[in-house]
Amino acid sequence: MKEYNEILIGSGPAAYKMSNLLAKTNHNVLVIEGFEFGGTCPNYGCEPKIFLEGAARTVLQSQQLMGRGISQPAKLDWQALMKTKLSRFNPWPDETRSIIEKSHDVEEGYAHFIGDKTVSVNGRQYQADHIIIATGQTPNILDIPGKEYLHTNYDLLSLKTLPSRVAVIGAGFVGLELATLVAAAGADVTMIIHSDRVLREFTQAEDEMLVEAMKERGIKFIFNANTQKVSQLKGELIIATDQGEVRTDYILNATGRHPNIEKLALDNTNIKYDHHGIKVDDHMMTSVDGVYAIGDVVSRQEPKLTPVAEFEGQYLFDYLTGETTQPITYPLIGQAAFTFPEVARVGVNADSVADDSQYQIKRIPLKYGSLYAGQNDQVSTLTLVFKGRQLVGASEIGDYAADDINNFIPIIGLQIDGNEYRQKIMAIYPTLGDKIAGLLP
Image (cartoon, rainbow, N blue to C red):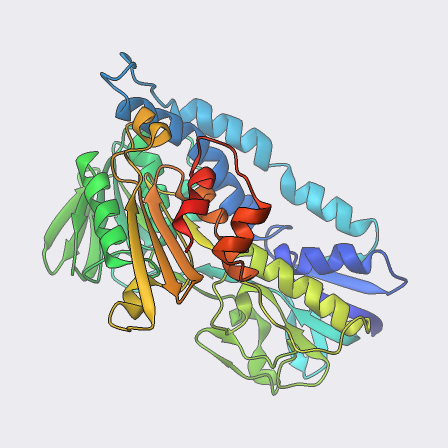
């Protein structure tokens, strides 16, 4: 049995961050990966999604400017776009593995525990001073008759030919973003949603504005619908719901994700977990001494995002190498859905404090500014939440909401007040940044 200083189970953003940091030490490290080296984000998640979003945004903005200087809108060529995307991203797993192999041992296969401190992969057993679980999450698949016809974002983001009709089950980040993409490419899209609204991370007003904007582009929404089964008849798929049937050519299952722990055989250990993931303390250690978990596989309140996973990888490296003994403290975390329009937020949600007199809410329509008017962005609305004179929350719906909200993250995170901002910062005019000085008390 070979022993290591560290065993990393997984190679996604959290583990890859640690792997790169450990490469600068004399530690003996084993990296085990049973899926794609690099994990979901660079292969089937945020990286290819934002790459494809660039083309979709151009198409949708050109449509938005019809009659206002644009006479012929852009048209998205799905086959050419996917060919470009695949040529960029297909090499990434091998490139990632090659980088890891320069400094560490690698096992390609699924690891499972055969005891608290022993893992097995490909019939070989390993132990380490520290075992770090970083296996991430995997898409849910509805357990219904006909589930073999359901596809995940992994499938859609490698789809070389776009179907004429696409049904999306679920309306979280993945469902809404990919519905925006395929609709921009010309597919007829129907969204089937179990509840009465979409992204609950944002305000209800922003959700409703997003849905309305998507409806105006022809995307159909069916709310409060329970998907019961899928069948195939004469070359088309039929989705049966308690609100009727939806006929389509392709079904994207976007009903969420769950922690990727099934193959770990955690029941052979004393590691505690729940349906949100592996439980850890404030030093990222599981209920077994010397075994840690980082990234999306962790059961925690913070959003499961790539920067959060990388932050945990950095923290755990610092902790295990003696750079810190302090418990992990998360920074202020921004979120965005790269739909069209985008929605983005940070800090206190305005809906959660609407009835609390300690907070003041300011809503600012941005469509009158020259930048937004020039893009014919009629929905852009900024919402700011103040507690006294301090900005504590910000959200926006608009064509560039993610970039706009990034202006406010340092103000909230560093607790900068209006006077300090005006004394030290003069932003580029005419942008949203230039208006911030006047929005802060």
